[in-house]
Image 1 (cartoon, rainbow, N blue to C red):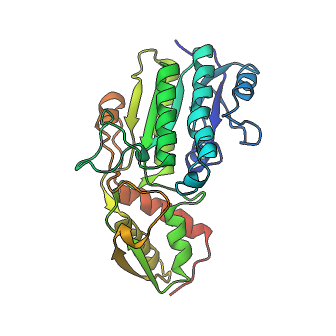
Image 2 (cartoon, rainbow, N blue to C red):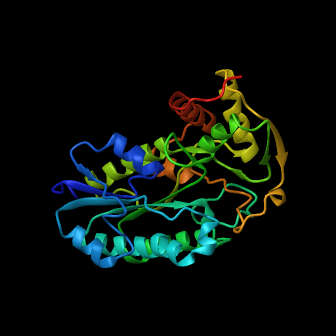
Length: 303
């Protein structure tokens, strides 16, 4: 079987939301090596080659990304280096070693104008530097490393790092009123669920040479606006005695940003279900789990 003689899996971006969840789970029968960004700059092809030559690898999982959507407009070279040059370097190394690459991408490769959930074959049309750099990373992976899985996801929340759920709960005790955008729609998705998906795909790639390849979407089931998501977070917090602000729904125009956001970030997961048998759970259940974990680790202001 392909890869069975290998002993290690390289995880880049291990300190991010998804990377942290992957490390918490680990792999059976394989070491998981997750160098910090200070130890491995994926945009440096020589650094990637040196690390790849240091031992025998079974697969690479790339969770590293420049995720500052607005800051990318100010620092386009930094965004491009991490989101486009980095995946290209990893793809070349994987192709040389003849091992699979799993690469995490984003809904921001689309412009959000579609009237339905996006499928993998829909044309990409990023609105800003972040989306364009991620799209370029996808294109590099496809062109260089045939044995790849690109996994697009969206609206990631977790108990680690900066994300919408943590931000809302942090504001709960300091604001009496919040305005939240209600005309952007997406699929709130728990980082832990993405990690489970990545691990399942990786383990299949390591044991089955006929594993499906290509681009897939993974998000939790259902859809919501940012206002819907904030409302769900605060309902749960309030049920646990936390003081929460009143919410008002506003349009995107009320919050101008350096980079435009897709108004429709919904992703269709049918291909993933068909090829891998995975059916994502509802976003409400996933977010409830994340909020419970966040509240357990915080000292929120009580009502």
